[in-house]
Length: 66
Image 1 (cartoon, rainbow, N blue to C red):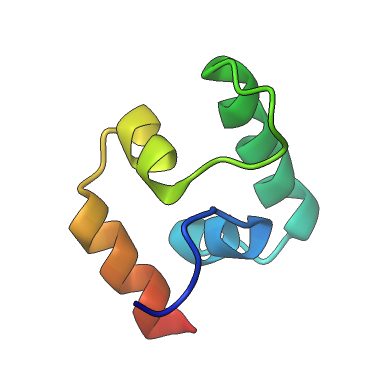
Image 2 (image 1 turned 90 degrees about the vertical axis):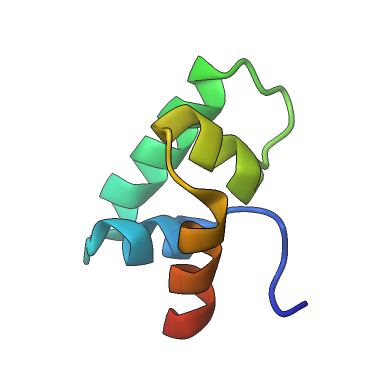
């Protein structure tokens, strides 16, 4: 398996098609807060559940863009 299980700010930038690091980071942090995560990391699966997205599709998009 390529890549990690944690969603990075750069991953959010890829998924949103966003060029601004700070915008993507704010979104990632707001999702982390919304799901009540104490750790500084959120997983790709947690992101998919929050945004109601198909994990396999998101995983493929992230792996194709790296």
